[in-house]
Image (cartoon, rainbow over all chains, first blue to last red):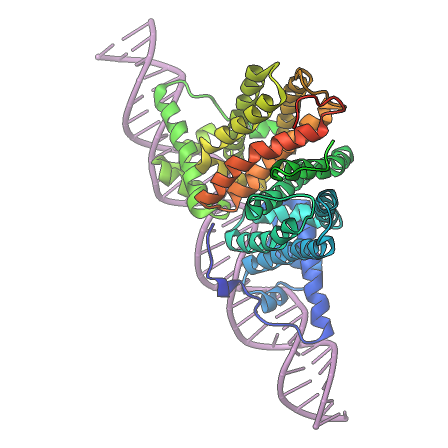
Length: 216
Length: 216
DNA sequence: TAAGGATATGAAGGATTCTTCAGGTTTGGA
DNA sequence: TCCAAACCTGAAGAATCCTTCATATCCTTA
């Protein structure tokens, strides 16, 4: 949606003193708080700055406009997930099917749950503008990390690891998202935690080609 | 998000002449068009009414405010999916594991793809206000439909069909959503169509308890 | 065909919101 | 201590946007 020139989305200037870093941090958390309390529709520059305890003008010193602020926050959150997955992928290199599957599912859940509140809030921004580019980049990074990981699994061979990696990322991301977004209860989250690894493993086993030696 | 009293979300009055039905239809499709073209952030009453070829006042004759309009559209879309799933569930009653799995995945995909454009648009509204209630209702309907379906599968037994049904709905909904929302290419959609049934079946097999007679 | 309900119009009021800018305050180094 | 740069302030301009309502047109039915 309303695709602003990418340059215009970049922060206006970088902080140099610790004072301003604190300010930026305050703005970020305030944004998330407002997002949760009032929703995207009522997220205004005034409200955010009030909550952050700074003046509106200050915000505009670091972000050329509201969109840039929101964009920065989404970007940060997305980075968190991607990094968590890259880390997990590295750690799981060469492990067997089950370990990899459980590892990926758990890593994703942990990354999201660690900051459940802001995760939920972030989802709300997502629709507001065109995240295709960001998403696409994140997706590619994921696939690039997961695909070789799949290839390195000793007890399974995949016809097309890229496709499987793509689907796996979509499955993890999507499932977690809907459950979280539906304002789910603790029970639902617990169920998710139990079932997600199972789904993950199920799909991988399903996609693993002919040679399936270790199986019930 | 800004939770308005439910009553206020209801349409203001029902159409009685065919003329007004056409108007409402025009408003609905216009809303979706604007949503796709300009995004939620730029969806204004004026823009929608212009596109629909009616006056702003006309809109307010049927919806007390903008939110009610958006709400109505989301509700309609959600109904479509739920109905498609209920239908599929009925049709698949008593079939074996693979048939049920494929049937559900395909039904979901078809329901979404049939109206891919508006589906994508709808996702954008979702974040704008509190859909927890709507979502929750839809979720329950799904689980109520899928759960007995799982119980009736002859070649599989599930420890907790409710949990499995819940997870299955989340998996289907979430996966399809992220792929569609990421503004994916035709290729990605094709991959999804191939892999989703596989994921579905994989998860179900994984959850099916001890007795798994028919398997490689 | 005439009356009355249903439907449509769109200018304008009222309320919000984004963003700027001229001027103040704080910080860190010379 | 003093200054320049970094940082902060917040009232106010400019732009939208939502919603209403007095008025006009269209349908139906008696």
